[in-house]
Image (cartoon, rainbow, N blue to C red; front, top):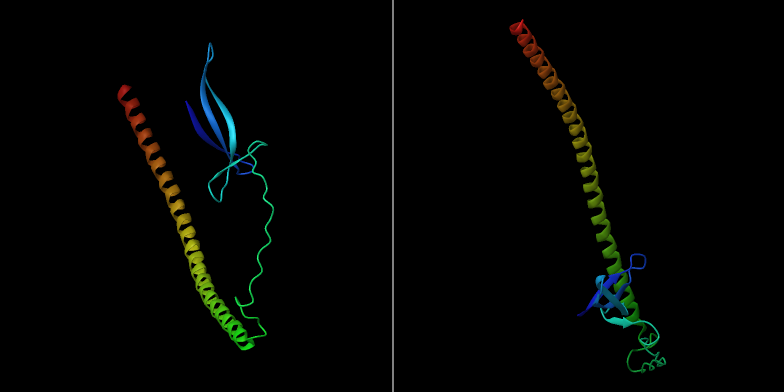
Length: 159
């Protein structure tokens, strides 16, 4: 039975496509026989054949047709419209820049607040860690005292 197997190469991130067939080899057992079909094109998801037999023949490049003069007016024909369009694009860009600056300032303020909160949390965690260590020492001390008392009581009752 044959199936299609995709295998990604780590170094190049290229995905190769193989035709895999299961074959039975006496005294050995089942094995897979793979035949390279081609590469997987990341943009289209299509299999592009590799090797001499699978390569597509290059088509001669076609020169692009010239744009007709009526398609778009020449800048010299309507200079006022071009100037207005450039002016509007500049105004839009300046507005976007101002908006981005305001967003950036707000994010910087939020970042400063978060850093301050983080520093406070780290200090609190340090105090909590110290309390836990103190509690551990107190529990260990209590355990040791109880153990000593128990051992002393047992030696007195035995003797």
